[in-house]
Image (cartoon, rainbow, N blue to C red):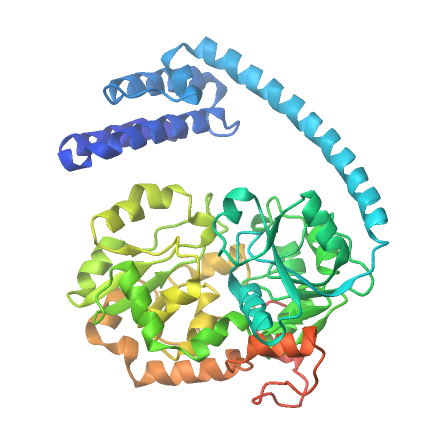
Length: 515
């Protein structure tokens, strides 16, 4: 009956709010979340014994009525808490029946759409490919972002005869695009006509499964940075990390790649192992890192000004990654308010959550409030992560791939690895980042705070570790990656290998773990 403790916990939360009038605006949000949370527990088949569910409902309903904000309307999905448990059961069974019907209808629609798309692809295969047409997408059609954006803008500069068109998820995303960017909405008639004729396809994730790769088209996959955690086929050994994720389907989509961009030979080895498909690794560097290699101090200052950060402050960027071993993906590693206070005057703590956590409760109940009170700066919604990196003086992260990008700035990095064993057991890793770190490693909050209090975060040992890390993982990043992609893969010009590239092939033994 441990789940009954949730009622006592919410009682304490509301008691705290009652004693702090300045938190009154949060009461409607907390009231709604409490109802949703308790109904979620009640609805899960493995959370409560059947004999306890009626009592759990009654306690929840009583709590919901007791702490209802005055004059606030009750969302439709929570009105069941104003009725009886019998009414809840009737409504739940009706909802389950509707879901089954919707699922069946969706399966029928999807089967019909697959047939339509196959016929469309057969019809669309007749038009000749346009060698001057390139299609771009990033982060599942979110906008002009990441490596594809860097390639797009460089192509506009040095290959203006290649028309670039972006694919966006919906019209709401389209409204956020720059005015001079041409776009189509995913799965629209314009989209289908576009992908039937385009020669070049540039993306940092896979294109939809319905897209048929035509002979003569060129698919360029940029990835999402240098891999630390297991990816692709390697997830077959980590069932907890691939819930809702089909490895065979992903490999079928990856088999459309012609070129896989890599910033170092570590990435080349990993991608060829994780994606055993028919592509060629292109040692171009990461296009989005060009702006980091050629870091403009004025750009960093402009970002600080936009975020309200004093120009002379030491900016500490904290960028944690998600956890596969925890429902929801987020685990609080330490008290952000305490860390901001311990950093002291003249320091600003900037927090950027993993994109998958942007809409989660972590922000609603914690980070958003700290940002509102001016204790930290929440930069999770900043569209260009490169801007956030440029604005910071030091990166604190756990196992985020951002550390490989940030190393191009040659600024201090601290790895906070307090749950490394749990992380590697659940997700897997290609190297031991605690042994090959780009800076000092902390395994507790006390160690992390001590690194900053003593100034060790930027000492000579930190610089030595960073130099070793940069030599391995910033290998092909020379500030000309985007130009290299355009000239070699879009224009077919030879002789554009990175100057630092050695001629020998990578050794398979370079993967230090993960076998």
